[in-house]
Image 1 (cartoon, one colour):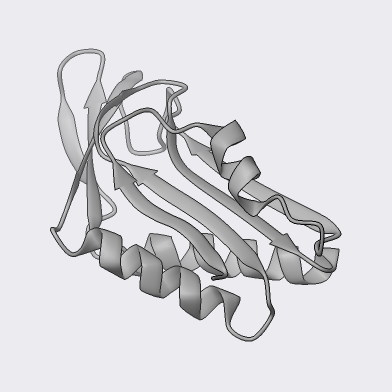
Image 2 (cartoon, one colour):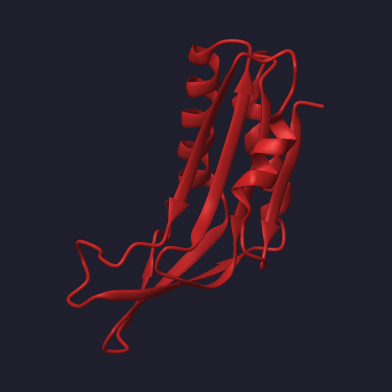
Length: 141
């Protein structure tokens, strides 16, 4: 199976666990993307202190489909997770690990997957600023 993990999780995401899932003697390249909560946003007036992620019940199945589509016929191996719940600045919100025979494939699959997650995964976030102001972000892609 080329998609070894496609998970929506309330637990903190573990980069080492994702890397272990794509470890394989047949690959020569690994590419990793970690999306973290940052303390600023162009639309924020104040400092961002948290993001609150929520998801549709079908989000995990959608994530698996997006991962399978990104892999296509490359033979790449993928482990991907997206976190939901309240995340503090610095917390990992999404991890994508891709291993492939060659670096070009690894980069291509990793980029395609994170871009399709941003466009098509039914996960939404509410941004929380230091003064208590909140705003929904990323609705509709």
